[in-house]
Amino acid sequence: MPALLLDGKSLARQIRAELREEVADFIENNVTIPTLAAVLVGNDPASEVYVRFKRRDCEEVGIRSQLHRMPEESTQEELLALIAKLNKSDEVHGILVQLPVPDQIRTERVLEAISPLKDVDAFHPENVGRLVQNRPVYLPCTPHGCLELLKRNDISTVGKHVVIVGRSDIVGKPLSIMLAQRGADATVTLCHSRTQDLPAVTRLADILIVAIGRPKFVTADMVKPGATVIDVGINRTDGGLVGDVDFDGVKEVAGHLTPVPGGVGPLTRVMLLVNTLAAARRLEN
Amino acid sequence: MPALLLDGKSLARQIRAELREEVADFIENNVTIPTLAAVLVGNDPASEVYVRFKRRDCEEVGIRSQLHRMPEESTQEELLALIAKLNKSDEVHGILVQLPVPDQIRTERVLEAISPLKDVDAFHPENVGRLVQNRPVYLPCTPHGCLELLKRNDISTVGKHVVIVGRSDIVGKPLSIMLAQRGADATVTLCHSRTQDLPAVTRLADILIVAIGRPKFVTADMVKPGATVIDVGINRTDGGLVGDVDFDGVKEVAGHLTPVPGGVGPLTRVMLLVNTLAAARRLEN
Image (cartoon, rainbow over all chains, first blue to last red):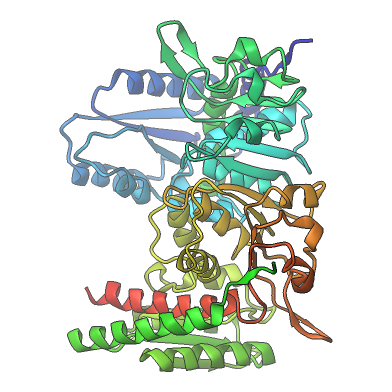
């Protein structure tokens, strides 16, 4: 029996509908509208698309969005000056700088400049540290999306062995900590390019989460029958968008599987909205 | 053949000897002496002992130490005022508040108040976050001690399966990330009280690290023959100080094993000195 699909797209739609009501409530009880300031430096076509999607998402739930465009040749100083202004602005609750930024600008310097209270991507080191200490201000969007996808499909992580493939700053590392903490209570194994005999490790997983950016890397022989497989990858190939998991093969083995597109991606986007509303609540109280 | 012992005591002595020379060099090239300010609130006997050891360690390598005593009934405000003063002082490079603090004081509030640049315990959330992002200011002492013990005994972690038992903020969680990062390159599994069939998981370990605070919890049947076993536990029992590992049983199975006392403990202490010298270098340059 092929795997049940974990439909992120319709779940994201449902969460946006919930958010729309929460945002309306917030606006009724406060003088201000939750507002996300997006900063876009240069003209990277993929970044243009991402920012457009994020603004459209905001609009759909009643969050106001600002777009601050800066030319490709902007200096780090200029970008930091804009961030400082947004940090101070009473009208802005969440700030996001669309990555990547041009080479003359140091990414870490930018992420550290955003006020932790307005850091809706949760990339500021203070927010990463608070996450590890299990008292987060905001949850990072993609890991949060993965957890929500499991939770809303009634897939418990308690006592389960979760294997994560990929040790990135924005997915693998924070997710490994979040899943091992009290509440999630999973046994967590973090794998990467230096892992020996990866298939033997991934076959241990009750829940397998893959975030490495290599098309169709995880094949059916790497999956324990009945396991839940979450594919975070989004790779552009000649055959269109594909994940890090070989969907056609793995769907014959897994118990649950996310499609790409339509799996984790829509939830990542919705979590940015969740954080922006949380930021507005925090800053207005 | 019984396990080879990983002798933390003599390794710590060796590192202190190295540090003594580095501290002497530093003093020769700077007008200031590296200085650690220890803050002790109340009269907890164990804390008294820890602080005394830490000060003696400092003395041995030529680091100056200050002891700031505050009465048991001190308020959080009073402690924060002292920390603010130490943060500003040009004479102080490292600050450590001996834990636990009395109940009327919130630990997190205290740890967040220490300037990240003087946070030689590396407990400030910003330092925890920078650690996760693999650009640490200081490494936390116990995890760093474990890594140094492996490194100086030529036990590589690259591609190895490391299983960590215990998900504390000061050992298990940071250590799991440090070992999985580029450089250490281990496949890391983080276990805890909710892990199912723990012996099956610990038997996967090439390197098993235990930090749960339960005397002799890890027994021989939980260890893969030939594995390296690092025992972070220090438990006071009627039979004296014992670790989290059943030493007598496990030494017949493991390839390498730390004794308790004399294993990780001495290295934890020495790493505080390493961080204090690093803080002095950072603040004087």
